[in-house]
Length: 143
Image 1 (tube, rainbow, N blue to C red):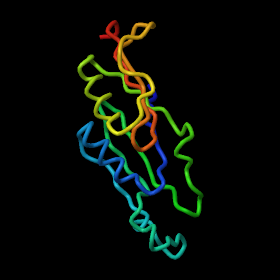
Image 2 (cartoon, helix red, strand yellow):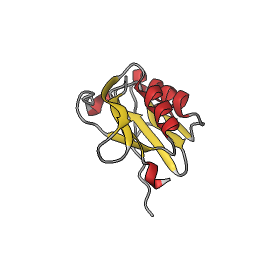
Image 3 (cartoon, one colour):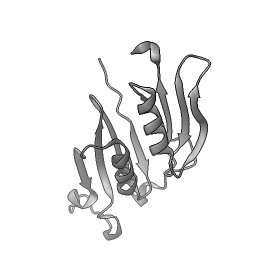
Image 4 (spheres, one colour):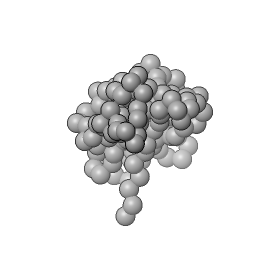
């Protein structure tokens, strides 16, 4: 079965965002590659971008990975107010849903408060303080 692993683009604050995500989810980064790690004569990197994140990965749960990078300036800026992605987290309990919703939405903008939905889930959605959109859901009948 295929796995979905979200990948998000940032404008220079991927490391800060992932430190925040790690504080909520826990775990250890499986990869952190900076642009300086790839710099060469064939792939020159401006000095002010050497420490930016080329690739970062945080394992979450069983077989899931949240990944990201900083977009180099030569590629243009990522529009942080557009719909870059929506990451859906399906939890094993209401308590886990509440913990993740409250942790990840801290400092962000809640679009739908967490609660019972007409379609049978317990969930909510928000844009975190880094502009990433999240949905947290718990389905009692699937557990």
